[in-house]
Length: 116
Image (cartoon, rainbow, N blue to C red; front, top):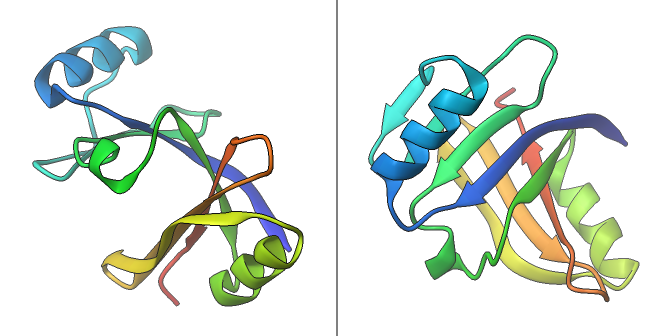
């Protein structure tokens, strides 16, 4: 079961330009600013993430990430319903695990499991 849509990640080619654009749009500085990920948090909104390696991972546009309690079960359920893996489950730091799939129409669906 999903805990809700809490993150949207954009694959970007120019991290500095994307960071400036989303900083202007959201009116906040990033809460995390690393070479591999820049994240913005604003009250009442999903986290906005910028992934400079997203295109190399096969991401073609923004990915909404649904937060789940059990990413293994959630991924198995999506695959059983006909989804295709774009990015298999991987740990991205601090015990957080992510994965992404695409549905039959090519729409991206991401999964996040917070560290326990």
